[in-house]
Image 1 (cartoon, protein in one colour):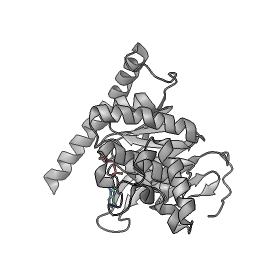
Image 2: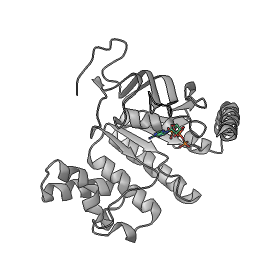
Image 3: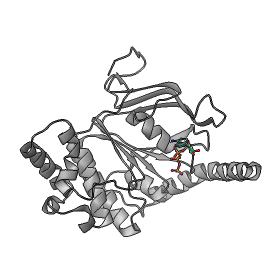
Length: 275
Ligand SMILES: Nc1ncnc2c1ncn2[C@@H]1O[C@H](COP(=O)(O)OP(=O)(O)OP(=O)(O)O)[C@@H](O)[C@H]1O
């Protein structure tokens, strides 16, 4: 990975986006601009939540930061290095866990290490440590279909942690879970995050989830997604989500989103009508 002279930010920043945008299928008749003009700096160890209407490009931005897709505008850096390809330093966790059903839990967790050529003993040790951190060491030798949905997502987090990432990218990781399990997973993620010192970039549709988790909430406009505003949340942790402060934040974020969601709906209706 190459470094590029980028004088306007610190090389210690976990993620830096300057003028970043993405046009899918650029140069074709199907081209559409999903994301534009994104300037964002994420500090090491910071927890940043992306909130915005459906289709505003939140996942797209995560893929660009992961290095899985190329930006069509602007540039991105992570710890001073230009982001051009995926890196084990930036792990992505999706909504639907993609564990290999024929491998045990520990083999799933250490799969990335086997690609790097680590020995079986080394892989088992690293997997045990990562599973310990997500409270699933006892399930090491089970298969994924023996676990609940919440446990499978914890395995996915352990798999990401096993690569010792500096940046954890999470794309609606708890969306498929019931409300109770989601709340427990949020607490669990905050514990893991505190221990790991990684920066977390977390996409959600849920305002409650943003208030529970974020140091800062990045609110996006509807398509093409731009940063509408960034709301800092300096409530101490553990957070009282029934406090006046939390309620005021929920109202603020709901108001910010409402116009954008209305705009996104109107655009989708117009697109459907002309299709
Ligand atoms: N691989 C792709 N090829 C072409 N278009 C894509 C691709 N991935 C996403 N898009 C389009 O880019 C736009 C933004 O999608 P994206 O999934 O990033 O939005 P989002 O904000 O994460 O949406 P949601 O909240 O509904 O998950 C959408 O119009 C989507 O159809």
